[in-house]
Length: 165
Length: 100
Image 1 (cartoon, rainbow over the protein chains, first blue to last red):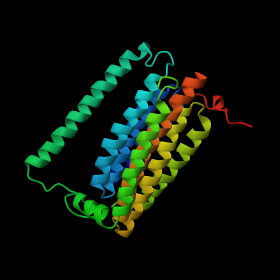
Image 2 (cartoon, chains in turn cyan, brown):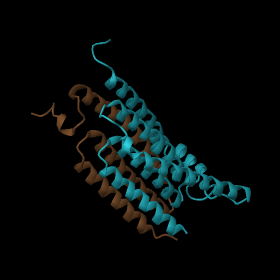
Image 3 (cartoon, chains in turn green, brown):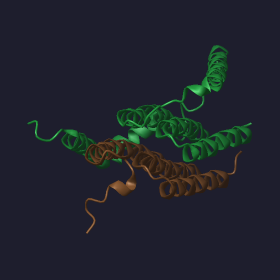
Image 4 (cartoon, chains in turn purple, red):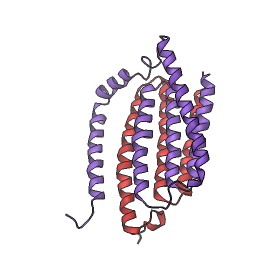
């Protein structure tokens, strides 16, 4: 079961990175990469790292890639999505909706049956990571906040239009 | 149980794919996306070794890598926008202002 899951997720990751390389449009490359990062989140879950898997999906596939897509949309490159792919878009969205519904049904079923969900304890538990972050890695953690402030200020200064002060 | 070497192999493949994409692609945004792929290959390797040795520190390092990647994306995309504003193009060849 776990090996099959690994093979499926690894195929999705490699396939979507190849899709990112082969597609000419940066917007579509970024969307392929969202898929790759979401599947990588699943692989992180297989490695006993549920917290990192959630962070991967929320921050990487969510926040960082949305930032990329925003910037891609700001740079004019003609038609973002060619309209001749309507059929496959419809098919893919139906497939995605079906997979999502099945996933939600399976997870709800496990909860309703009263299974203990994995990841509440063990190696990569959230409490363990929190304890590690605020005890052994306290200084790196604080320095990271400095880094983020610096990045924030830096990107504001960089993207400010000159001659308008 | 899945052999951990599979994860390392996948990590190596991902890193090589990211490296290849970095050199093949011409526009700055896709090159930047390739860098993200390489960072994620490193994350996968970190998590594999964290599981192998039963150490939580590897997972905390991955947390830091994700944070640094977010900061890097903010700065890098601002620089790309700046390049686009000056050169009207995001091709990597266009950014030759500092060439001697």
